[in-house]
Length: 258
Image (cartoon, rainbow, N blue to C red):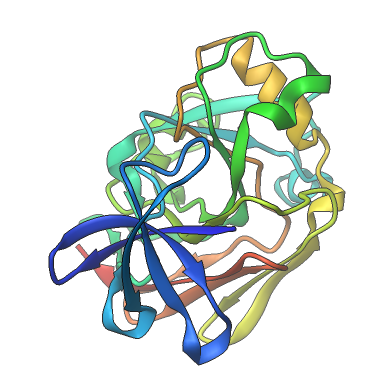
């Protein structure tokens, strides 16, 4: 199932995206997408609605250096344990929304990746049960104001990654995806910048869910970012970034000055 969140003429709704290609239809889900969904009977062509971020999490937990080639790119060692950071919920944006470059910031970088959406309240989840608490998977662009790191990589992550619009998610959540070996590709104005597979993750999804839930309670809709591979680079106002993950679709965002 593909779960999206849309703005339609009557308001905002969670929907089940049905069909393929140009014939996609949004079927409204009653209340929320967690558990077994029920439907209101209302439907709209996807071409007639605006796609929003598929979920509004209470928190977004990022994982740094979870691809070995990205660690090498930065001249850093791969952490023996997941290295996590937080993005505020206000950083979340949907597909099509602009990534806004902060005033005075010269270097803003893209970072395509796979995101895990939690489906139920949980704490201290064993690795063997991690998939049971996952609603599904979506695509993320983990945007970073690289100039604000100022050589203090660990101490300034929250600032550099926490700006409004720095966590595009979407276009929807795929509940039946297998995250173990999905092709991931990031393009800037059509030029491929990142080309990898989730099979290259150092710490896989079950380990990440277990690790994070041992630190904090995870709530329905919370999002874990699994990391970004090598090829991270700058974007400028006027460019467009697209992140594609096999089976999940494409997350596309223009870049603009704040």
